[in-house]
Length: 88
Image (cartoon, rainbow, N blue to C red):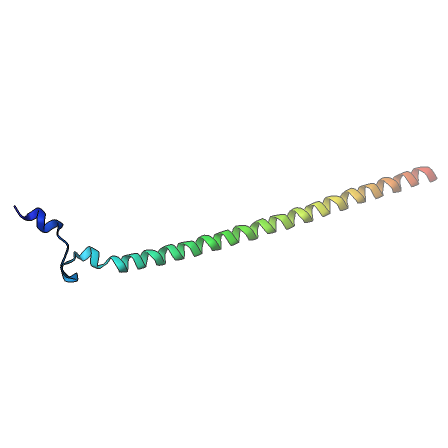
């Protein structure tokens, strides 16, 4: 039975190679493009998340400034109230 021998022997020329193997370079190339574009998409998403993070940081700074302003204004009103109470 010579079937196992022919199954395991190396092809003598490229034309004898199975169709699947023929298409491998093209498939690998397509996969590499896919991986490349997928990496670009992930990079864009990371940049987007980074921008959102910066935006949130800026909002926190603004809110802290507003809180400080409100506290200062409250202190100012307390002092004005004290002055009014002292003069009356």
